[in-house]
Structure formats: C-alpha cells, structure tokens
Image 1: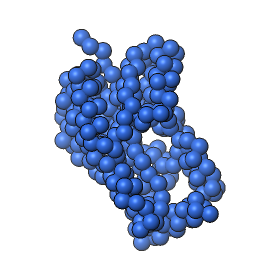
Image 2: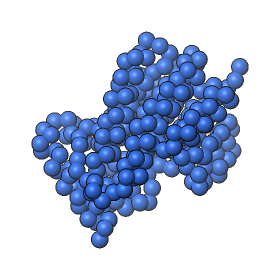
Image 3: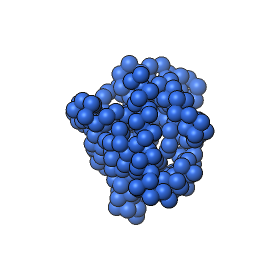
Image 4: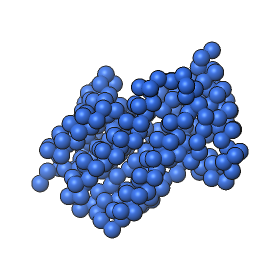
Length: 262
C-alpha cells in the first residue's frame, strides 16, 4: 500500500512553511506546492534530512486554472493523500479604481477558484483514506467588508462559506473539513513592515505563523470546524455593528495605502 501524504499549498514561506515544519515534526510525508523561485527545493531537502520523511514538491502558479488541473492530475496519479491544506492566497490594499484588472482577477483566481477546484479534484483521493482532513485558510477579513481592500475580504468570505458548506455535506463521511480565520501574521519582511507601520494595536495582535500552525493542527485533530486564532479580534468583529466597523477598517486601510505611496 502506498504511503499517505499531506498536501500544502503556499508552502515556501509564512503559514504554509510553518504548516510543513509542524507536520514534518509529526512524521507526516508531504507534498509542498509554491510559486517557482521560492527556494522550495532547498526547503524540501532540509525537511527530508532533519525529519527523515518523504517530501515531494511542485512549483507552479495556482492562479492559472490549467496549472491547478495539472497539479491535481499529478497528485492523483502518484500519491495517496489524507490531508489537504489550502493555504495559498494573495491579498493587498489599494483604491479599487487604481488597481489593474489583472490584479483583481488574480485574487479571485487564487483565493476562490483554485481552492474550490483543488478541493474538488483531490476529494476522491482523500475519500480513499480511512480518515482524511481538509483545512482551508480564510481570514478575519471574511467577517467585514472594507474599502481599499474590496476584493480580498470578499474572496475570504467565499473561503469561509465554502468550507462551512462542504463540512456540512461531508460531515458523515471519512473527510473532515475545517476553516481557520487568522488575523495579521508576520509571514515575510514586507508584511512585517506593514504591520509595524500600522502602530501599537497591529503589533500586539499580530500572530506568529508557527504558533498558528501548531494550534490549527491540534484543533483539526479535535475536529474543530471553525478555528479562531485571535479570539479577541474576532470577538470585536462579531459584536461591532457593520455601520461602525466598516468605516473604522476602511480608514485603517486608507492610512496603509497612503504610507505605501508616500
């Protein structure tokens, strides 16, 4: 019988890389996916050497539909999988009329279409395992629209809703579906700089990717259907009325893009 593997997208940095390291510690074999030119091969070799596991990788741009289908065809033909972590995503801030059409398209293709298509194509493979899991990475942004970041929260609201619906559909099967809604994380140098520039509150509520990954894996095994990492920020978003939180968040985003452009 073939060994089982965990699939992680967006695995070369940030939360995806943290997921890979935490699962490697638990002796899970891995299939890591990222964009080309992200030093993924070196990371794979490091994991194999340190944890004595099998790690395969695939470099591709998941914002292109044909690449998603090529990836899933390769996985389904070569591997048995028991975990899919849909982590790859893209965000950013900007005035809606100033951003390009390709920018909008890429967010929707990667944050919406790629997750749905990857899950759809890999689900039959997961269903062959006695016990399997899907973890989709959404965001606290899913809980409130905001100006100057109009497309990203909408795409993450899709991820949250899609995950909840799929959980309900599969809850009596061997495949358990969960969604995590983390807040800001210092995933790379650029994101860390933006968090620092947002002031004291942003700094104290930002999250460490490794702590988030560990917590998510633990809660996934406990069959937690909606994983909340920053409970205080989530509570604020839940209790504040939309007429109050939308202007506050929009003002925050406007300050952010003003910092970037000056």
